[in-house]
Structures are given as C-alpha cells and as structure tokens.
Image (cartoon, rainbow, N blue to C red; front, side):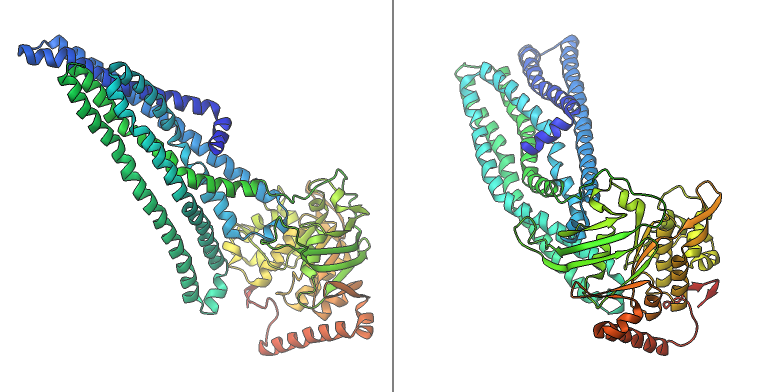
Length: 620
C-alpha cells in the first residue's frame, strides 16, 4: 500500500479519473444485473405466460441493455486510458530520477555497483515497481462494485447473500498464503534479472578480449548459467501463480453454484421471485471476473515491492559530493597543491557498514606551480590513476586536501572543477558519433576552435584525411579508429575546453613517441594561437599539466617528477636527479625503455600509431 500510495500522491488527478471511470464500469455492471432482472420479471416471464409480447416491451428492454452496455464500455475505456497514463508516467518519472541519481552519485559509489545492476535498476526494477498501477483502478472499481452488489444482494435476499459472501473470506485467506509463498521467489527472480544483465553487459564490453582469446564458448556458458537460473526462478514464480490463479478463478464460480442451489430452494419456497434469483445469480457471475483484478494487483505486489526496494536503494544512496560557493579563479594556468591525501576503495559488500577500506594512497603530498609540467611515475598498482581521479574531484580523499589556486576543491561551486580542470583518462571512450560530436560533446563551439584543439593534440592530419573530416562517424567506441587516434581525439576533447589544469593518465601510451613528444612540447610551451568563441584570434595561456607517464622521453619533458611506490610519494625531483638517487625509479624507467625497445624491434618500419590506421593521410 505504501508503494501504491506513492503513485497516487504523484498523480492524484489521473488516478481520480481512472477510479471514476472504473466506478462507472462497476455501477453499470451492477446495473446490467438489475436490467436483466427487470427484463426477466416484466418482459420474458409475462411473454411466456401469455404466449406473446409487444414490440414496445422488447424495444424498451433492448434500449436499457444497450444503454447500460454503452456506459459500461465508456467506463472500461476511461479506466484503461488513465490507468495506462498513470503507469507510464510513473515509470518515466522514476527512470529519470534513477538516471539523475546515477549522475549525482560520486564515482566511488559507481565503483561498488556493477553496470548490469544499474541497468536493471533503471529498467526492470522501475517497471516492476509500477506494474500494479494498470490493474489498480480496476481493483478500486471492483471494491466499489462489491459494495453496490453486496447492498443489492442483501436487499434482495439475506439468506442467499450470506451463502454467497462466504467466498470473500476464502479469497482473502488465499491471498495471504499466496503473498507469503510468492514474495521470496519473486525477490530471487528480480535479483537474477540484474545478474543476467550484468553478465551480458560484461560480455559485450569485453567483446575484443572474448574474441581474441577464444573465450566465446566460456562466455556462452557463463551467460547460459545465469539465464538458466533466471529461467528456473521465473518457472518457480509461475508455479506459485499457477497454483493461485485456478483456485482464485474457481472460488467465485463455486459461490455462484451455491447461490443457484440455495436460491432455487428459496424460489420453490416462494421466498424470492425468479427475477430476483436471476439478478443475484448474474451479479455473482459478473463478480467472478472483476475479482480477478484484485488477484492481478496482488499477483504483482511482491515483485513490485522488490523492485521498489531496489529502486529506493539507488534513490536513497548517500555519498554525494558536497559543493561550496567559491568561484574558480582567473584565466591563467592553475596552481595545484596536494596535501597529505589518503584514499581507499570501499567494496560493495562493505557498503553501509563500519569497515575501513584498504588504503590505495597514503599521505601523498606535492605541488605544481602554475604553468609547470609534473610527471607522475610509479609501478603498476602504486595509485597513479586513483591520484588523477582525486585531482579532478571524481572522488574525495578520506583525509587531506586538494587545492586549486589555493582553494580546496570541495569549496568550489558545482561545475567549478570541470571549468578549471580536464582529465584525459587511461581508458579512452568515444561515442558512436562524429569526430566533431566526440570533441564538443554538444557544446556550441566553432569548428576553428575544434581544429585548433586537434592541432595541439597532433590529430588534425588524420582527421583531415578522413572521408568526411569532422563529420566522419567513428563507430561505437571509436571502432573505426586506431588506439592512438582515439587517444588523440580524447586529448582534443579536453583541450577544446581550454582547461587551466590538464591531467593525462597515461593518455598517450598508444601513440608514437615522436608524436607524443610533439604533443607534450606544444602543451608545455603554453603559448599558441587559438580562435576564440567569437571567431577572433588571441593568445592562449598554457595549462598546468599533470601527466602519468612511463617513457623516458615523456618524463624528461616534465619540470618535476613525482615517484609513487605503494601509494606513497617515494621521491620527487627532476628526471636526472631521480635517475641518480632513486634505485626503484631508475630500475622502473629503464625496464619500460627496454620493453619499448623490444616492441619496436618486433614491429620495425614506420612511425605513427602502434595500432596502425590513417596517419597524416597515409594508411599505415
């Protein structure tokens, strides 16, 4: 009732109209019985006694029956229209609410919840939550109908009414048993829907891995296992409903038989007329089907409650990033300061419990003056990518602060960090859109500015060589481009916004070292001609650059290197200084250099992207 009340409060006018239409249907259903009883008593029986009837009597009876049927049809149409309108509005509203909540919740929350589960929350769970809305007005109309019918039956004959009414406690008891049997299996089925969605999403996302490593059969078996479990759970739900539905169908029919039996005895005793018996029997016959509407609502309630709880789990989730009112300062390159930052990831099992997450970063501190380039270097698992997420406030540290221009990022207004800083992540994502659409992401930016960003990212050559230039469709996730080309478009996407702080998380690993050097040199130079929003040229002040890197040539371009080990700042200094005094740093960058040299030896000839593709108009 609490779930249904949410919908009623949200759409009171539509619900009222649907209930009024349902009440009209109920009233006309009872009216049909009254009309048939009247026609039996005043038209049919006199005709049988006299052997004849009049056209007027037949026309009058037909007019009454047709009039009642027309009003009944109007009630059915109104009930279905407004019930459907209410249901689809609630589903649309809560899909939007869940999606808005996904966008509001921090990345740390998304780390704890698989994508398949989130898709299920926004789709199957929302649909299940409001599934009872469609039959609800019918059920309310049935209650209204039962009241009218009960009064009519009692006024006709109390004895027959008592016999017929015994069916209602039986239905109520049956529903209680049904709810208790169905609730756990419905909960299990709803959870398995999310698991099937999760497995499917992972298989599609990892399609390249599945194909290249020959894991098609394994993935098929994994999906088959989850699908079979869902099938079995749905069959179990169907079995419970299969036991419930026939009994619910039979009870009103048994009530009709009892009414006919007792009514026949009462008719023989002269306690009631034939018209009264037809009236009462027909009322119980009509009630047998509408009572099913109560069963439909009750059948959907367990799944609805499960879906609602899962949807509310998303809508009530905490952990949003609080914002202040401070404005990001200036147009020049931003200064960055990281003070004693600590951060750890909480698992989904630990969510809501008093469990300390394992730390990924410990007491990390460094600073980057305006316009400087800082290289973050460290072995795998040292916390480099986590640190980049903290710098652009995708997550907040458990302890410590990150300051932009001396202001704690938590004190900046909503959107303040995005206006100042841009992240080019390690995993490049492109939408199934044009080159222009992937760079502007819907922002109203002139093509001159887009081309300038492409030039800075050393991507203008291959984009100009594409069949439709900026209007070329890149395919899902940029499938028509090489890895290096995708990385450079992602970099151009960040640069077109003219960030004052640019954070690159190993964002040039798939491009040729010479191309990477030109990109970083252009960024480090900090001065280039840009075309502004108004179409006029002007000087662009360079950004402060934080780059996660492993190549010696890239690292050597940085003003300072921050070397991470086990989530801590092990050393800081220039590349040359760290090569001399830090054994771990020296071994790491030399190992990277040897691995890169071996790869180049295995793939001789040509420069450009490691994965090939069009480079400066030449097919590699």
